[in-house]
Length: 406
Ligand SMILES: Cc1cc2nc3c(=O)[nH]c(=O)nc-3n(C[C@H](O)[C@H](O)[C@H](O)COP(=O)(O)OP(=O)(O)OC[C@H]3O[C@@H](n4cnc5c(N)ncnc54)[C@H](O)[C@@H]3O)c2cc1C
Image (cartoon, rainbow, N blue to C red; front, side):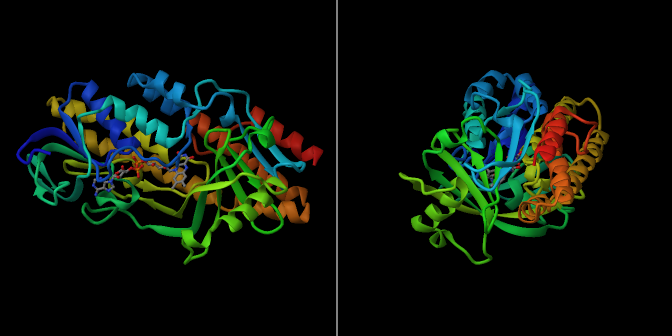
């Protein structure tokens, strides 16, 4: 990182949103660079479904074919399942007809695709500490890998530093109020589950078991999977030794699974925060820095990429001297509205798994019907980026068929 270097745009955070913004700006000829406190792309497959709308952006950035190549083959994005366990009868199956533009590309793979296209423009192991504005420029204070501090300047700064970075705090006014809803644990396992899911390929399967519902998330569709469930307030990775994970997995699969290893245990909050201010002067928020959403409907990444699509053309116009600050006001209005609507949508559906669980234990078709309708919205939501239950779709019809069979 060069201390006295001025850029047209500096980006704090090179996750998927920061890198997509960097790529879009650089392709438009803008002198842009990013700093990221990490050492490189994440190795954790957090987000997985890349919506058709996000794919359209990635195609426009020249990364579409590489993302498709990095994605799982098959139609994993088109199905949601609920059952007692993987080998038992299905309680619910929601399917949409295949949408070739929507892919299941795990976040680590997506980040590698983007990183290959912005190489040299991201300064790793550099932490943004503060942002200060003057009328005609912004100064970003950055801690460098050697522990020093540098203060590069830019015409504009994008805070794309996720839900724990500067953008989510009070470095900029209007971060919004964070409401923590629950704590969850993601246990990444190496286990031979492929034969058990054959014919049941789904981006998420809710396995309701006898005790606690567990969501099974696909990573490579073969041996790499994530079990996600509620976590105790004070639990740590040490609370998930191999015997406990084996037990959880046995509940998921309906019997003991040989040859299991734990690849990692991570905790995350289900929380809700949408910034009141997406743009303050020459500094803007994008992605999780602007909005942290509960996992319902898996919208965080796609919402962030839609921020990028709305922002980068406007920033390009601004640094070229075309248009005024109204462009960023417009960005704020447009994207805050989308963030609030998506956040509301996700919160309203937060109880769906509980509803499913109840339907599983009491067999009440009304509960199952409601849960099916909510889950069918997830597929609509991925497909269109809208936050409403749309008119009947193949997904809805399949859900209703499942109910009548149940
Ligand atoms: C378990 C889990 C499952 C999820 N599943 C889905 C899903 O299926 N679909 C979906 O759409 N979304 C999902 N999400 C949400 C999704 O992962 C996020 O919305 C997405 O990562 C947001 O991207 P981002 O680039 O805005 O932020 P991040 O991915 O958080 O990236 C922020 C970057 O900023 C860097 N950074 C942070 N602070 C600083 C600083 N001070 N200085 C410099 N760099 C900094 C970090 O190192 C990081 O690289 C999931 C999240 C979790 C936790």
